[in-house]
Amino acid sequence: MNVNGTHYRTIWPDPDNQQSIKIIDQRYLPHQFVTRTLSSPDDAFRAINQMLVRGAGLIGATAGYGMYLAALTADPKRIHEDLQAAAELLISARPTAVNLAWAVHRVLTAVSSLASATEIRSTARFAAEEIADEDARYCRQIGQHGKEVIDTIWHRKGKQCVNILTHCNAGWLAFVDYGSATAPIYAARDDGINLHVWVDETRPWNQGARLTCWELEQEGIAHTLITDNAGGHLMQCGEVDLILVGSDRTTHTGDVANKIGTYLKALAARDNDIPFYVALPSSTFDWTLDKGTEISIEQRSGEEITQISGLTEDGRRETISITSASTRAKNYGFDITPARLVTGLITERGVVPAERSAIHALFPDLCSSPGHSNR
Ligand SMILES: CSC[C@H]1O[C@H](OP(=O)(O)O)[C@H](O)[C@@H]1O
Image (cartoon, rainbow, N blue to C red):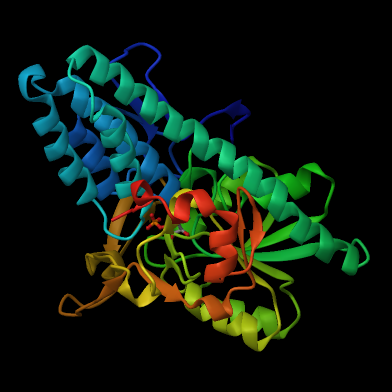
C-alpha cells in the first residue's frame, strides 16, 4: 500500500541482511513512520505481544517469519526441539487471531521431515515468504469479490456515494497488503465508485482513529472519524449503506470473533436492515470450533482504558490518565458476532453465507484436512 507515495508491505525481508525481517512499528502511527528489525523468534514474539504488529493476517505473517528466525538461530544439533519451543512461544503471544497458530504450524509442517539445518532454514524461509505472499494475494482477491457488493449498492443508489462503516483496522496494516475489509473499498475506488467511509475510533487502542484514518488518507479515500457509539445513530439516520469489518477468527459455522464492539454494530445493522459483511482470508477460519463462544477472548491491561496516549502540540508523545487512580478497568479485546447477524463472508474464493454448509462447500479442501486444524 501507499505510504507518502511509496509502496510498502507491512512486513518484508531485510534487503541488507538475509538474517532479519523488517516491520512497521504501528504503535507510532499516524504521527511517526517507524520501522524495526526482527532478528530472533523473541523479537517476533515481542512484536506480536506488544502490538508493534497487529491484525490477524500480519500476526500470521510475523509468526511465519518468526519461525524462520528460530530456524536461523537454533542449535543445528537440536533444531527440531528449538523450533518446537519457538512455536510454543510464538503461539502464546496473543490468543484470539487464529492465523498465528495456523502460520506456525504451516512452517513446522514444512520442515518436519527434514534433517539438515541448511535445508530446514531455506525451507522455513520459503514457507514464511509463501504465507506473506499468499496473504497479500488473497486480500487482493477479497477486494475483487467484495467490490461487487459495493457496486450493487452503488447502482441501487443511482450511482450516489456509498457510505461504508468499518470498525477497527482490518486494512493493509492488519495484513501484508490491501487488507481484508479495506480491499473491497480500494478495488471499488479503482473502478470509479464514489464512496465514503465512517471509521469507528475503536477504543481503547484506537486502531480506527490512528490506523484506518491514516491508511485511508494515504489512499485518498474520503472518510470521517466517529466515536464507537455513533454508528447506531448514523444507521437510524440512513447514513450507512454497508458495514464491512474483518475477523480475527471465524468458526467453520460462521460465528465471527472481531474487535470488541463489532457485535453491537451487527445488532444495530440488523435492526436497521443494513448489510453486515465480514471480509477474511481462509487462514482466519477455525475448522475445529463449532461455536464462537468457544473462542478465547484476549484481555489486555486496564491501563489501555484508563490512560490515553497522543501527540502534544509541541510534538511530544505523552500518555495521560483519564480516570482517578483507583478506577479499575476490564479490557476485553474482542467479541463474538453470531453467524445469524452476518449477511455474508467475503473470502478469496468468493462471497459466501455465514453457514457451515456453504463455507464447507467453498473450502472442501481445507475443512476436511487435519493439517488445517488451527489450534
Ligand atoms: C482481520 S484483522 C484486523 C483485526 O485485528 C484487530 O485486532 P488487533 O488490532 O487487536 O490485532 C481487529 O479485530 C481487526 O478487525
